Length: 128
Image 1 (spheres, helix red, strand yellow):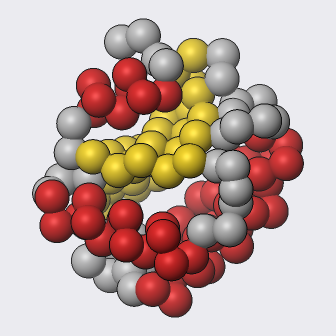
Image 2: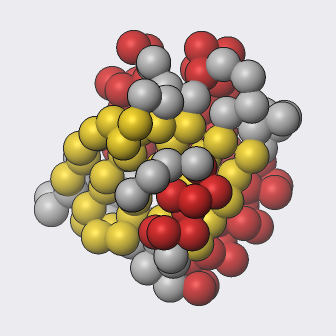
């Protein structure tokens, strides 16, 4: 992993986990985090919190790796899993939306990106 990276997971409620990332993660770092956290999935919804991280190191091939890793665990997440992505800027929101549209084949899984944590928590149905 790259220096300065941080990874932490915490349950927000009985069906939503928050994956907190800091620093400048590479795709392999994020895939390792998924593989360390998702096998024991008791959650259906995920909030990826990149508010203390940058997605600058990721490209379309990296998003394909992440989609593949997510696909491995989508069945254990139950029906209608949701993934929310909290980022720092509107540019990163557009990046996540574009890359997700090009790489996700997890229908009916929904992905929503925003710079507004409350918006994402509401979308996931989590009381703050």
